[in-house]
Length: 153
Length: 388
Image: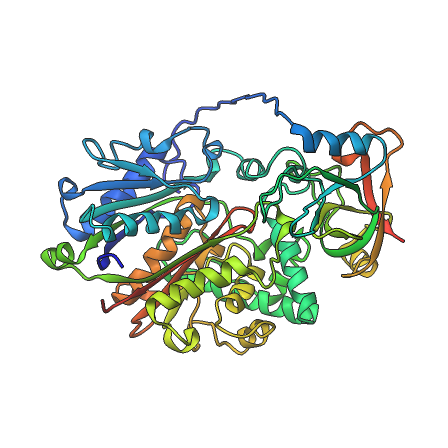
């Protein structure tokens, strides 16, 4: 709109080094061993994954670690076939909420192992309640994407 | 309870890609507009509230200091309020709190954003913690897409019907925006164009999503005494409600969405509203995504859960319907994030004071303004009325 005046370009780079604390450290180290760790709250009995150092509802400090199931149900998903900043991998990508068996929160991760050529194909493969299991990368680095995706059982 | 509070004027900039001005120059447009419209001298302001999205959006931190001059805040107290997408509504709450407490009689409230100067999507990824969720949620659309899909499945609404209702909202609002001189995207769309637009994050397609906008909104909050002294048209704050949820996206139910339900309920209780669809004359619902507007109708009690699609297709929430929603075109057509929620309040105030111009809902006396912030984490609702 109207006249465009000059512009000035600038890039700010701010590297950070985040302390992962005991809970994320345990969770990441578990991934390196092919295990998914959660924590359980002694008061509300909920199991959270990734494991937390405190219960978000009771605020108890949590140190009751459990290895949670690597299978569960699809709660919801979304499909994207165009690349965007911060996308976990190359498109097409399906980001999903998954309820792992025995846990009490929805875990964000990826779905895969099916024809992902179109939204319709994905829609045919994944519904609410579709049973899925974790598929791991061969090389594990202690990273959330050590789990490649969850695929239908 | 505190003192009665009135909104006695608002100013919005023209929205769009505003490379014709610097960020403070953009803010100045909105501030100058509200003083010009009301004839009030900036000297009479007791304090200023300013707010935006995270500073990474424009790469300047503590923008309320950057804007100090144009906010007319020299020699006065200044507050910053920042609650992500709900910043604008939180700004209005801050102005309201300040005046209702009795500690100020006249407060200038300003929200702003200049989204084209940075990378809005990258900025929004920084709302998430870096250890887990940030890897999966880059930007806003994915969240709302998963929320929408969970909602439609939970209530057994066929995908085609959800699509049809979202399309109706998109076509109507992009058309409504022609009557709003401040709107960013004004567009005649056909149903086919909306249905077949490219996928952003399925089921959300291009015309289901709000734009990036540059813009600002300024507003004056006054005590009853001050409003009477100035003799200006007043929109009275009848109710406020703000509620939030746990931080992790997967920890709470985003379908029967408690923070949205509670925010509306708090505001209705304070305003004495029992039956919102009957009693409200117009609502400015925060609608960055068509699908989310449908869910809000249900969370705000405009209808029961599972009913929003049918009622939308019947025209209940369109301009001539029983409860017109977003006659301004809403956030779907104009989204300068730090100002967006304040735009909703400005529009709701304009409606109950008969100042909404070509998109005025005739005889509107009671209105609702709303915005949502965080990763589906917070909702804020304000009710305005033409009578105290």
